[in-house]
Amino acid sequence: MKIIQFFGSLILLLISTLISQHVFAGPHALSNIQLSTEARGKVSLIRGVLEQGGFLIGQVSPKMNVMFLDKEVPVSDDGKFIIGFGRDFPAQATVTFKSDDKSFIESFNIRAREWNIERIDGLPPSKVTPRSQETIDRIIRESKLIREARAQVSTLQSFAQLFKQPATGRISGVYGSQRVLNGKPKRPHYGQDIAAPVGTPVYAPIDGKVSLAHNDMFYSGATLIIDHGQGLSTTYIHLNEIVVEEGQAVSQGQKIGTIGQSGRATGPHLDWRINWFDQRLDPALFLQVNAQ
Ligand SMILES: [Zn+2]
Image 1 (spheres, rainbow, N blue to C red):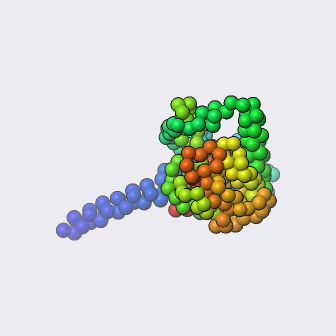
Image 2: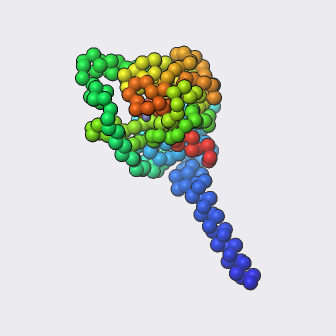
Image 3: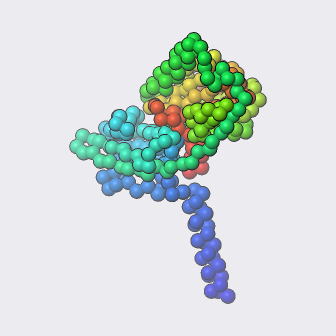
């Protein structure tokens, strides 16, 4: 009897270990990452998801430089940095850490993901294939404004905060999907879509500063971009109303606008995105990491 109990509890222990590893510490969880001996005591990993669309927040000793994708990564006064891995990021991310006397390289395995294919038919043809030169010029002008807003590098440090969902509603679109509009393959979808009635409030998921507030863009309608420092920004599109101004500081949970269906939208929803410079990241992973 005692032997049976012993094996029973052993099996339970095994099962619970397997479950907890699966749920709380998957194979790409930060807790499983072994840094090199050179990095120990100089680099620490704070939070992140090591997969396509994911990110890594870490901290380095004072006066240490971080290099990633051939660029110097901004590092805060207290040593915090963030890097991001876009949708098609390769299997390995290589980060170089440099101090006065030495440098060393850490490699992180980035999990590859599979993406949905979404077909949307019945869009007005003029929105799928812009015809006039005027419209094309407008699209170029507006995408330049968005690119410039996202290229800003500020010393804000809210990038390291835990994100809160910016709106309540049904998740109607996910990051990474390949959209096929009226039969034509388009660029992948980089946002998380939250479907909710027009007028539903949108809140800042973390602190930041408004870097772009535009009321009428061709594709994205009323468009808002918030800077969170060190290359991290969030974008909110198809808004009905924007209630903050460019240059304004916003804090987590503050109302920044309302859900709408402005621009090219098939129904009222918030499409929100996260960028680390030109790497487009998955908002769902920033929310998921709260559970770590
Ligand atoms: Zn969307």
